[in-house]
Structure formats: structure tokens, C-alpha cells
Image (cartoon, rainbow, N blue to C red; front, side, top):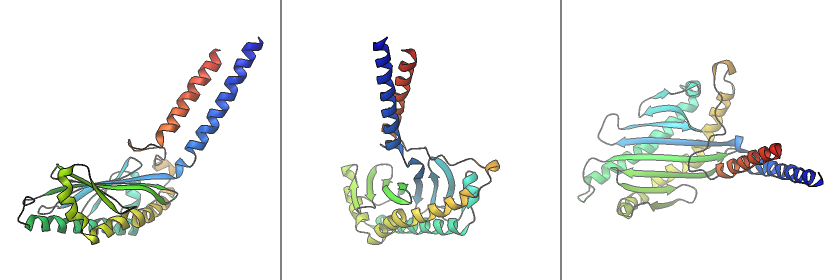
Length: 241
């Protein structure tokens, strides 16, 4: 009996420690938001610019160079507001600069000649309104891969074949400035404006933005899930013991 009592006491202490660990690892996650943009630019097509914006995994807006279309209740709330219009203009400014970059490439008499299609993704993580992680990834014609980190303003390639094209983009100081400003200044500013509007949504007509969502590449998710799984297993063992 004494051994059984001691064993259960140990399990109680283990579950308590795991609970505290889970709180420490996962504290503040409700203040973390992920903004994800994915858009395509075809410099000589109409429309030449279109894409989609998501927040914490929820599609919010579809857009092109001239208008927005809401994709959810949260999108409808911010649709046609000044904040959304200004936010869209910032995206269009970046798109215009990228379009000029593509057109300049098409005018050069080298292997980059032709009508290019650029696919761009931007992923940013914000905690309490501050940027904690961000990246821009570029795919040119489905084969040239390079990226830009706005926090330290560095460029890199995922495939060596992209180095020549990346260098051309790296030398575009205006574009680099726009990318860094969008990730570090514009996005957190307008996210705060959108959150204010979303908090005013009637509960009966809206769904809550999922603040527990994580991108598949997030490393923050892993320790929380692992600790909770261990807690669950430990609790079952305790009950069955």
C-alpha cells in the first residue's frame, strides 16, 4: 500500500510539473498572429496582379490590382474600410515595383528574355504587435527560387540557378525598402486596425479568429503539443494505476 501511495504521489507531482511547463511554453500564444500573402504577377497580362491574404490560416481577402473580394466574415468586416484600402495600396505599390523589375528583365538581351510569371509568398509572425519572424519567397517561372529576410535585410537562394536573377532583385533598393517596410511597419499597423474591427463583430454573426493556429513550419507548436500529449498519457496511467 505504501508503494502504491508513493507511486501515485510521484505521478501527481509529474502532472503538476508538466502543467507548469505547458503554461510556460504556451503562454502568450493568443497574442500571436500569422499573416500570409500569396500572389502572382504576370507583367503583360490582365489582371497582372492577383492573390490572397490569410490571417492565422483563415482566408480573409482575395485581391488584384483594382479591387478586393472578402473571403470570410472577417474579410467582410474590413472590406471597404479605409484601413483595408490603405493596406491594399501598400500591396499594389510592391506589386508595381515587382512588375517594373520583371519588365526590365524582359528587355535585357540575355537568358531572362521572355514573358515571366512571378509567384510570391510572404509569411510574417507578430507577437503583441511586434514582428518576430518574416520572409519573402520568390519563384520565377516555376524554377528560380530566392528569398528576402526583411529583419536583417538579407537575400539568399534556395537553388544556385537563381543567383543571377536574385542579384538583379537585390540591387533594387526601392523594392527592398518596400518589402522591409511592408513586413515591419505596414502589416503590424494594419493588423492592429483589423483586430479592432474584428473585436466589434457581433458574436451571433461571426466566428472567432483561430488564435491557436500555427503554420506547418512553426517550431513554437511542437513543444506545446508534446507536453500536452505527455500530460494526457501520464494522467491515464495515473487513473489506471
